[in-house]
Image (cartoon, rainbow, N blue to C red; front, side, top):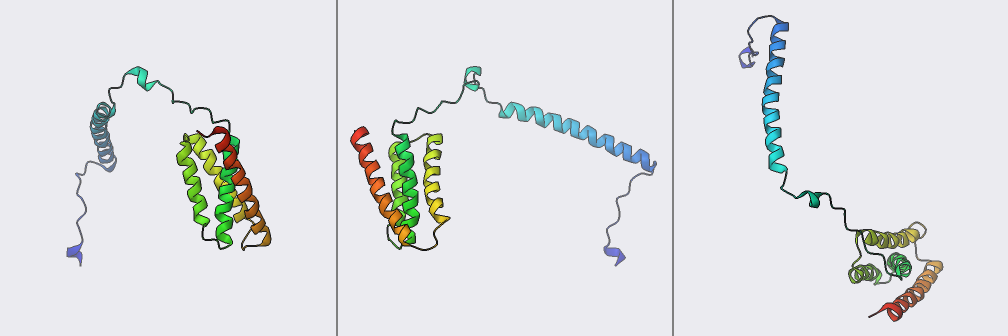
Length: 164
């Protein structure tokens, strides 16, 4: 069994302290040579030639939201609530309300901040009912009916006032 055992690395016997110091110094020299060389090369390779005025530009601010933004936020919340409630109550069109929200986002083409606000309100509408309802109740059916009326009113109002 001793024949299968690997022999330990033999170092010249100059003294344990002296050998350790030489190895540490040699390691430091190797790191300094290869570390600084690769660091310098990496800098020249990764730095693109961009004019100073481009690197100092500020991000483009989002345009102001439309005057009907508060109505769209409410509509987003209603769509989220309908998405949850209609599925809960066994209607086949539960997923259609999420698709309506996708359509709203596509037609509005909001910037990232505004999009996040609209999506957040949709999720809030969904999660509000998800936290309370586990089965379809008369109250849930009443909420569906009210949301369908209010959502229709908001949609018609926005189209009539601001549609093209």
